[in-house]
Amino acid sequence: MGEDEEDGDDEEEGGYTDEEDEEDEEDDEEEDREIHETNTKKGASLTKKAAAAMCVGIGSFSDPSNAQGLAHFLEHMLFMGSSGFPDENEYDSFLSEHGGSTNAFTETEYTCYHFEVNREYLKGALERFSQFFISPLVKAEAMEREVLAVDSEFNQVLQSDSCRLLQLTCHTSAPGHPFNRFFWGNKKSLVDAMENGVNLREEILRMFKDNYRGGIMKLVVIGGETLDMLEKWVVDLFGKVEKGCPLRVNTGFDLPIWKPGKLYKLEAVKDVHVLELSWTLPCLHKEYLKKPEDYVAHLLGHANGWAMSLSAGVGEEGMRCSSVAYVFVMSIHLTDSGLEKVYDIVGAVYQYIKLLRQSGPQEWIFKELQDIGNMEFRFAEEQPQDEYAAELAENLLFYKEEHIIYGEYAFEQWDPKLVEYVLSFFSPNNMRIDLLSKSFNKDSQGGQWDSDDAARGSEDVFHGRINWGQ
View 1 (cartoon, rainbow, N blue to C red):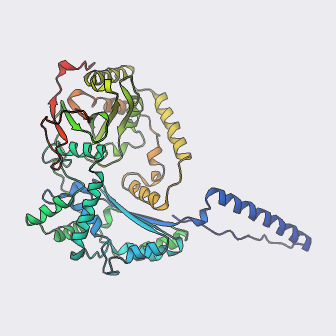
View 2 (view 1 turned 60 degrees about the vertical axis):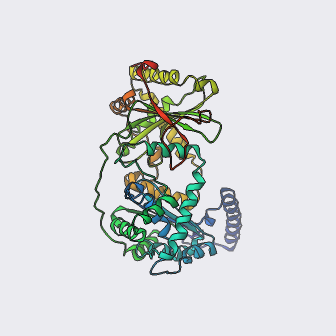
View 3 (view 1 turned 30 degrees about the vertical axis):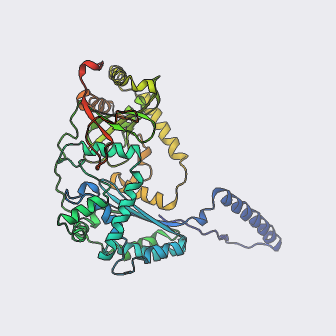
């Protein structure tokens, strides 16, 4: 994407008198002052930084079972120098010297790398950035340090209740299913792999060679140069990226994710009571103009007397929104009295779902969502340039070209049959219940999350204990 910064005055053909010139100059000066003041108030687009992001269509679902966290580790090791710029600090130093920064993250099905820099240094940053996707060195001497960096990131989320709950859902998913992974990776998982004979450097290079190909890479560049110039830079600098698409071997995608009819209990770090109801839906990536899951979420997101707050929907993270499945989660923050009424609350949810089925899909609700989407797009807050580039690069993986900027806000096709189809998955036989609370008995037994005794077991949800409203 290019941004013009030309503000020179265009002269029209024809003659002017000296008096007209003076009047025009005064008008131009006044207009320039007004433009300058307006730009200052708006944040002065001329001071925006340049940015770029690369999304590669491979993530933690591709981790080998004997080296969990490998995709995340590759994300770290990719920055450790390249053939063109062998000094592992060259890229970071260049960006920091020129007002920039860089970051990356690993999702279940893609990995995203992004940076921003003062706009006049964009080409230099792209020269260094591009080499990571052509000839990374993956230096052996940097591996131990980066294992510790991965471990540090894991330790930062160790006390996060939402992350602990997410990993419990992974731990209790069906063996052989892509969800049954330790996505973060840590020192233990990576060191254990090496002690079991896995050569991590060879595995990283193999994952890179097999998967980092142009057919599943999406690049976004934001700069002040013309589009023609930006395109020339991209072609020149990224032209040597390996072409083609990797061969995909999908295993376990058709397995049920969880055993239905189970309630899992997890001891909380914070003093909270959270009830989560999860239903597995088919992948709805291609239905982004219809968004039936958002229609249902809009109707289910209401609290009652036992809840302090309630949210519902399919989250953006890969465990919730992937080609494997969508996972619709209703998260209810309970009061103390609500904790004693869990089964009543679940029954009330199903009574409401029954009401939604009986009343049928309503087009006026979809139009309301359409208006909300248009408003949110129109008044969206401006993001840092690199975050915006990363968002667009992600969108390139999922949306058609004409919807890359607007796709997540679009409600363009009303499909009541699809809404009914999605509602059909909201049944007890397709539900998982997780209960997070600090008040669980510490002597109770259960599963575990990475050697942590936080999980307090599970129990069957007997139909006789809940009024399902079916």
